[in-house]
Image (tube, rainbow, N blue to C red; front, side):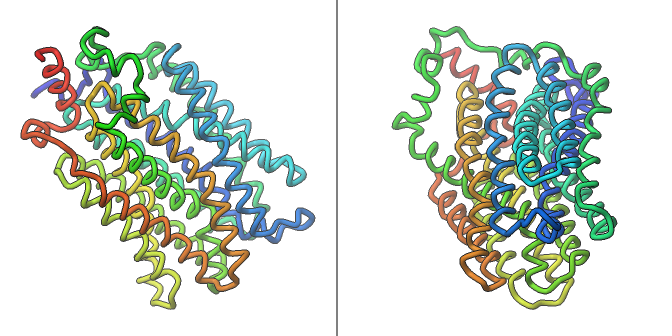
Length: 431
C-alpha cells in the first residue's frame, strides 16, 4: 500500500484531523443555525417584543462578528500556529453560547450573538487550514469537504433538538448545548500541532522567483490577468452567503408563515441540512472532474428552483425534497465556489485568493438575514421571503456563467489540485 494515502505531506494522520474538524464544525453548525430554529419561539417571547426585523438584525449581528473573528484568528494562526487560537476560540464560543442561554434581556442576547459570530468566524478558517494541512494530497478536496460537512450535520442536530424540545421548553435552554466545545479542549491540545506544518511541496519559493506575487498579493489579484475573475468570485461568494445565512436564520419562520406548525417547519430545516451535507460531499468529488463551472452554475439554479417550489402548495414529500435541494444549492454551492477559486489560481496565489473571496463574501452573510427580514416586513405575502432567495441565486448563476472554465492540464485532471500545486511550483522553478 502506498503510504501517501494514509499520511499527509506533513507527516500528520489525516483521519484524526478530519474527524476532529468534522466534530468542531458540527458544533459550529449547531451554533450557527440555532437562531433560525428558535426564531418562531423568539418572536412570541413575552417581554422582549421581538419583530421580524429584530430577528433579521440578530442574524446580521451574528454574521457581523464572523469576519472579525476570521481576520484575527487567521493572523494569529499564521504567527503562532493553529493550536492556541483554536483553543481560545473554542472557549470563546462556549462562553458566548452560555451568555445567550442566560441573557435576561434582548440587548444582552444580541451582544452574545455578536460574540458567537466572532467565535464561529475564528474557528472556520482555523479548522479548514488544520485539516487542509493534514489531508492526503490525492484526496485533499474530499477530506476537507468531509470536515466542512460538519456545518450541515450541526444544522441537522439543531433542527432535531428544536423539533423534540420546542415549544415545550424555553428556547434559551437550547443555547446551553453550545457549551459542548469545552470538552474538546484536551483533544485539540493533543492533536493540533503547536506550529504550522505545511506540505513540503508547498514551502515558499525564494522571493526572487516571483517578486510581483511576494511583493503585493492583493495587487496581483487585481492585476489585468486576474481582475475579472477576482471580482466575479467576490460577487458570487457574496450571493452564495446571502442564501446560506438568510436560510439559516429564516427558513423555519418562513415555513410557519406558510401555514406549517413549528414541528413541521423544523422537518424542512432538517431536510435542508441533509441536502447541504450531501452537496458538500458531492462538491469534494466533483472538484477533480473538470465540471466546476457547470456544477456551480447549476447548483445556484437549483437553489432558485427549490425556493420557488417551497413557496407553492405541493405534496409534503416534494416540499421536503425541495428543501434538501435548497440546502445543496446553498452550502454545496459555496463549497463549489471555494474549490473554483482554488483551482483558478496558481499555488502561490491560492490562499490569498480564497481569503479575500471569503472576506468580501462575508458581507453577504451580514446582509442576508436583514435582507430577508426587510422583504418579509415590506411585502406581506408569505411567498415574498422565498422569492427573496431566488434573486441572489439567479445572480450567482449568472456570475459563475461569466467565469472562464478552470484552467487545468491533463496532469491536473488526473491527479487533483494538490498535485497541481506541485506542478505549479515545478514550472516556476524551471522557468
